Length: 245
Ligand SMILES: Nc1ncnc2c1ncn2[C@@H]1O[C@H](COP(=O)(O)OP(=O)(O)OP(=O)(O)O)[C@@H](O)[C@H]1O
Ligand SMILES: [Mg+2]
Image (cartoon, rainbow, N blue to C red; front, side, top):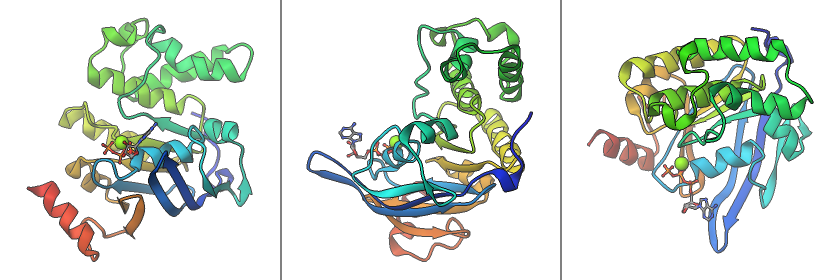
């Protein structure tokens, strides 16, 4: 697979991102820095703003304040969507398209015609996430939850993004498939992609063994490499205890 070299992959930086829905201030000045090949886990209670933050980082949701830059330069929402892939919570596959169509739609939109190279690449990605060729012509409702989730991951990679954001990528997977996702994420890291993984799945988070951010009520309360093993902030300690209960 032809990914850019590590030094060609840009730095993703969010500075003081704020976002409200009506009177609810969901994100309250979030700053984070994602370096090439960096893997970051994000944890936090339901409703604390994790999915909203990912949608802002991939340009789907306009921010009210703050900035998002790639290599220090501001990026348009369209560019963000092209360069930062998002695997949605709940998959959001296109219901009227088969598996291949789901992977090829975005490259097809960006170029007038998708090429044999796009199709080959889509096949490689699907193989990599464990989707076998007999499923390529099925539509989402003809797939299991775990199969849909794997197609959603392959679709996010189909645009050859510089960074990938995963919103609870293992919620529908059994432990064996979860291990596949860990391997898949590690491979992307080797290729230089920056990645953020939102998860409630603590064994999965521990298997990723990476820098972890704890989001609470729209704020970053802790950001540390040893957050899961040696949490210092009291709110993080409480959250991790609740996860174990
Ligand atoms: N499009 C929207 N319109 C209005 N409110 C929204 C919208 N999207 C999210 N919210 C609200 O913003 C808050 C944060 O939601 P978000 O989905 O980001 O949380 P989350 O941390 O991803 O939660 P979960 O762990 O349950 O997925 C919630 O109060 C939610 O109701
Ligand atoms: Mg969410």
